[in-house]
Every structure is written in C-alpha cells, then in structure tokens.
Length: 313
Image 1 (cartoon, helix red, strand yellow):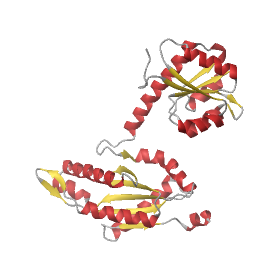
Image 2: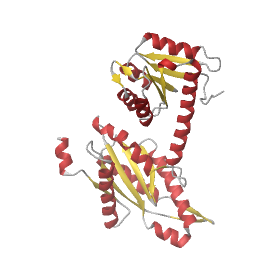
Image 3: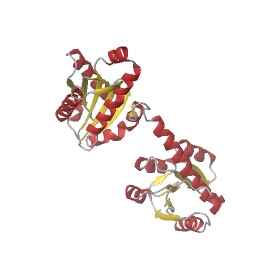
C-alpha cells in the first residue's frame, strides 16, 4: 500500500504518559490489516531518550503534553537525540497555532486525539517515513561533491556542532585545510580534465589514509578539509606531514599514459569548545597561508588565541 521502509515491520516508538491513550494508539496500529508493526512505549521524554540510542525506530508518535516535556519543547528534546527520526505529534486539543509550530520545528504531521482513527494514524506514520527518507536522500545529494564523491563544505558546516561536542567532553579535535600546490598550472598545462582526474585521485588517497582517523571533505577548488577526531594538534601535525609525504610519492595519472607528481600544503588548528565553525576555519586558513608563504609542501599550525585559552582555564 504505502510501504516505504525496507524491513518487515514498521518500528514505532510511542511517547505517551496516559495509559489509555497509549493503549488506543497501540490498538489502532496493531489491528491495521496492511502493515506489520513493532511497538515500544515510553511514558516520558527521559525514557524515550534512553531508548533511542539503543533502538532503530522508523518513526515516533509524540504526545505534546508530558510530565517532562510540554509543547514544542518535547519535540526539541527528541530531535536533540535523533534529528533524523520522523515524528508525528499528538495533542488533546485542536490547536492550529501549536500544529503550525510543530510542523515548522520539523514534525512530519500533527494529529488531534479527539479525531484519531486507525487509518488516519497509520497513513500519517507511513507517509512520515516516506517523506523523511526522501528528504534524507535529497540531503545526501546536497551534501556530496559530485566530482570526488566526498562530502562537501555544506556537510562539514552542518556536522561541525556535533563534532565540536567532543571537545566539551574533554576529547581533542583538530581541523586542517589541504591545498594542492600550483594546481592552476595543472589545468593550464594539461587541461581541466587532467585537473579533475588529479582531484579525484587525491580525494581517494585522502579517504583511504583518513578512514580510521577522521573525516575528509572537498572544501572547494583544490582544497580539502580534514577533521581529525581524538587528535591533539601536535599529533595532527604528524599525521598531516605523513599525508603530504604519501601524496608526494604517488604518480597521478592524467590520461594518455601521462602522469604527474604533486605536492600540497596544509594548515592545521585545534578546535575548542568556544569555537564557531568560522573561527576554527579562519585559523586553519591562516595556517595554510603561512605554509604557502614559507615555501609550500609543508604543514603549518595555528593554536587558539589567548582569549580562548583564558576561557578554557
């Protein structure tokens, strides 16, 4: 009928503190003739937050009036744990203002308990899953660089807050910008197709080298960004130096049985809890400029400013 999930049953988390309402929702879903469902009930936001990391739910049904979450606040608390989980919200009131706020905040649908039926609820849940899958597919395309297959700058900007949270837990995080030296001359001498071939091969080498160490994105032009997780700046500099040596040792094919060697420059910085994406990027960019000014084919680093160090202490 409307099936858009890939496994045997629709996995639903019901977040509802009223036992009778929870039973009603469960009965509606279990008695439908078209879809198998697997249900789990949480009686509070706290219980839901405990369940979400350990389960693989397709969709959540969220009551908007819970002991530990009321109105839009309850939706935000669920989204903070799993931003990709489609949520259908329930309320005992026909409140158009609240329904609009819920949809604006990312809920897939808004249903009033007083008008609820099995068909209406099932349709809302299945369509919520389908819409979310479509949205995530579009997001994946928007976050990908089509030439190299790597994620792009947009992806890194979106993921930066989640990565930065590691620093709030005391873990080290470093960010680096890599720029292929004299890349314009490759395009000028051998053509843009040759330049594209080099970019694809560099992306492949970076992905392999960083597979267990962090994330690589195509930042733009001949620049790549590298995020090194659980890696303090001195260690990040060593990793980047080894990476430059590896790239310099490779013969890059540019077609017609031709190959060239390249070098690259890297600017690296550590990421602090007080950093914005822009502030961390600015330091990495300044370090990259310093590496190029010093002769290219090297790694330069830049630490945090004194104000950030004082805040850390």
